Length: 126
Image (cartoon, rainbow, N blue to C red):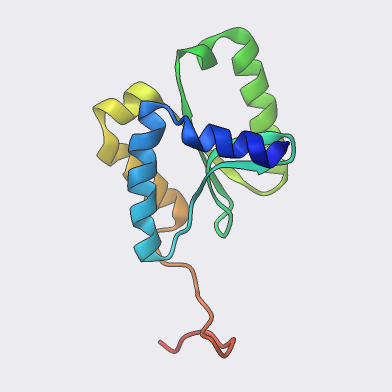
């Protein structure tokens, strides 16, 4: 059930989510792997880089309503207790300043490629 819902959500991204997803996919060449609409506990994370424990959420106008804002705050606390950093952006922030949003994401990732193990299991030599 959870997997089916996640698949359906991936097929019906909002315009803003689709725009951000195109940019996040490009970070793979730098060693950062994001997943979209990933199930985690009882939540679906808009975008997550599990290796860096970074969650990126895009919020529309409904998230400004009290019930959504309370739900988001509780959700963020749960994720933070699990060691995740949560970045939230309004859709209009992405529309007005996609470069600034991506800079914030890169900063949160630490700006460097995560250490990758070679096929032998040893870290790559410098």
